[in-house]
Image (cartoon, rainbow, N blue to C red):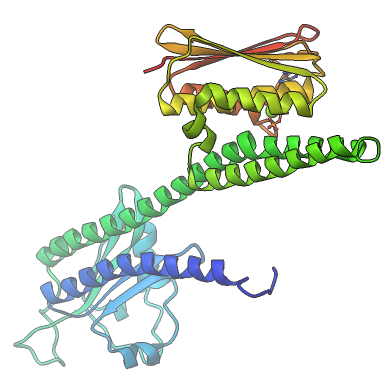
Length: 385
Ligand SMILES: Nc1ncnc2c1ncn2[C@@H]1O[C@H](COP(=O)(O)OP(=O)(O)OP(=O)(O)O)[C@@H](O)[C@H]1O
Ligand SMILES: [Mg+2]
């Protein structure tokens, strides 16, 4: 990892986010543990959420002072009775925890405990943690004689209700985390499509135009200069597209000029930048809903890009015609064609998948007709509005 200035910032902000989320659940768990101790009149209460390494990811206690807690030392491990509750999901109501055969001892500073009530915190079959109490308070009995003052069945029932609340809090926290992951994954996919559809195509044209300028610079400096202006314009457009992809804006040109004018000018640019003849015609087009126009533009861009990059076509014709309430977009090339069944839907090839997604996303359909040797026709139909 780089150690430059700011290198640690993402890590720090991730940690802070994780912590604040952690705190929220922790607050709920703390309230539950404190209520349990108070309601059941116990000296000590605790709730442990296991981690995958034999320890506890969370361990919340009530009835132990901060100094005591510090003196006890590291968090407990999953052994003895705690482990039994976590592994078997069985309640444990014991008159004296120290006399249980599973009892494995305490650290020196651990408070002395005798009577014990512990319940698993479970979501269905899954054990999320354990909630437990020790030393039921007996106002009338001196602390030296604690017999006859044990946790009751009623206590067990009450603690069961609190354990259910703890299960809900923990499950919610997990669901929250999962939904956040899904949102991030969805956002990443959208950005990948957007970058692929818009920005990478602009950069490809940019490279070609720069190559053309290089080839012309000695022979025809005036035309080279024109090409270089084109390079600058394409670079500016790529920067705009990138910005739009990041903040999820529509391509600016669509708002300013509409779909027909935008397509026409993009086709003109491609016609100049490539050796193939690229044409555009439009007929009877009415304004379409924004999302449909945007999808049309993106599909046209990808189909054009594929034709110019893969087919070796001498001609690529783009047409946009009225179709019922909606419109039909067609991109036809006379290039080498390909076997549509062979192209894998996954992996590095995003273009065809992305076109299909875009069409489907606005209630439209996409068809790709191609065979080796016959050229390729991509058609997209949208319903209008
Ligand atoms: N018009 C076309 N003519 C010839 N072959 C094509 C045409 N369009 C697509 N193909 C073939 O289909 C394949 C898949 O196209 P697709 O757009 O999904 O991916 P890609 O263009 O290879 O990569 P990406 O679009 O992700 O940058 C291409 O690699 C190419 O072999
Ligand atoms: Mg492609």
